[in-house]
Length: 147
Image 1 (cartoon, rainbow, N blue to C red):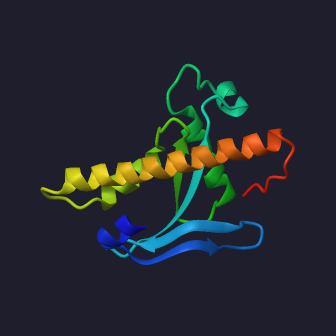
Image 2: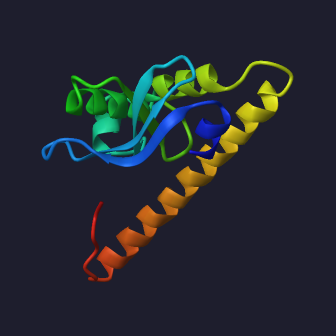
């Protein structure tokens, strides 16, 4: 969210409630050009049953693509940017385009893009660790709240 502010985005909201059946949107913001985007994040594993059936063992990015399609089905009438990532770090095309579009042009662009990917990578690793911890707790018989 810090980068969105630095890159000139406004009206940045976190965990925005949608309708009861749609749940919440992770981030809603307006770009410097006045376009409002709804960003919903998801992380999929390339070795999941669905991804493997779709060919992830033979082709890169299959899990991220499936995640994007899942988000588009969930939010058919929303100007959505699915921030879909694979557990190993691959980023979905819509999310990649958004970051490239928002990053300021000029001599600092490389630095800005590098900072963005570092922040995204760190967030992904935190969520991967959280997922592993939840699986460990569930395996030990503890009640685990899934969110």
